[in-house]
Amino acid sequence: MNTDPQTAGPPVALVTGGLRGIGRAIVDRLHAQGFVGAVVDLADTEAGTTGGRLPDGFRYYTLDIARVEDHEAAVERIVADFGRIDTLVNNAGIAVRPPTDILDVAPADFDRSLSVNLRGTFFLTQAVARHMICRSSPHYRSIVSINSMASHIASFDRAQYAISKAAIGKMTQLYAARLAGDGIHVHEVKPGFIRTPMTAGAATRIDDIVREAVPQQRWGTPEDVAQAVVTLATGGLPYTTGESVWVAGGVTIPQVR
Ligand code: NAI
Image 1 (tube, protein in one colour):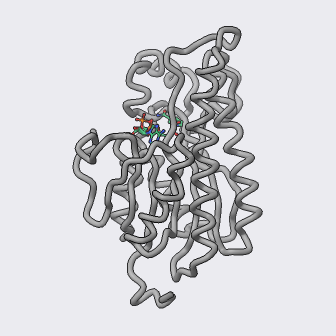
Image 2 (cartoon, protein in one colour):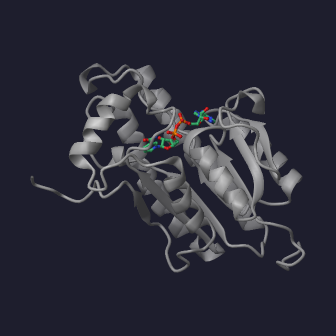
């Protein structure tokens, strides 16, 4: 394995759910920082994207991260195509539609949220981490998961989403502790209200919440989140692992007005 940064090629990223929204902004910013890599998402082809053609150096692979049995083959293909993976961004996630009172949540809906947001994320991280620790790399190595403000507050009409995201916090700490000795940094980013296709249906309600409860008085953009992710993925906080970075306009500040 070539570990000379001059000749080993650019850093390689794998971004889940990278065809639109926050994931797509992450791909674009990684590209701007010189990364190449893989985008996995649900569409049959990259033409399913709403974010336009992927930037040069990024290749699309169809993978439903809930299908854990498909992870190993997908990761092997990506490693065969790019040589290794330096950065995993666990961005793919699903919201609760329609919002449902915690007293009415059906087991199948609970399972669906956990199977994508938690189980799929946990096992894909495991599959990628196994590859990472077997290969040396000249590049900074990291795993960054997109958590949510939902893990912090109690919206009882989105219980399964909140529970799945809360567990990502513990997953982040566990992988961070396990992989620190291998030089792999593991973090989570917690976005607040970000304007994406996921939040489009609730835009009017969120406008009101943003006015009332977000000190910076605006929605976040996918680029705001991407900037935090790429700061972490490029080693901007080198003596830090297992941490949460909020990208939420100050919404965590307790306020009495
Ligand atoms: P989005 O719905 O606009 O995009 C999500 C992408 O993930 C889509 O391309 C979708 O096809 C893909 N995806 C969904 N399930 C998948 C699966 N099983 N396998 C592979 N790909 C899958 O969502 P958005 O807003 O960009 O969210 C991205 C992440 O950020 C999610 O994890 C979400 O929970 C989180 N988040 C979003 C916030 C927001 O306000 N938009 C706030 C806090 C967290």
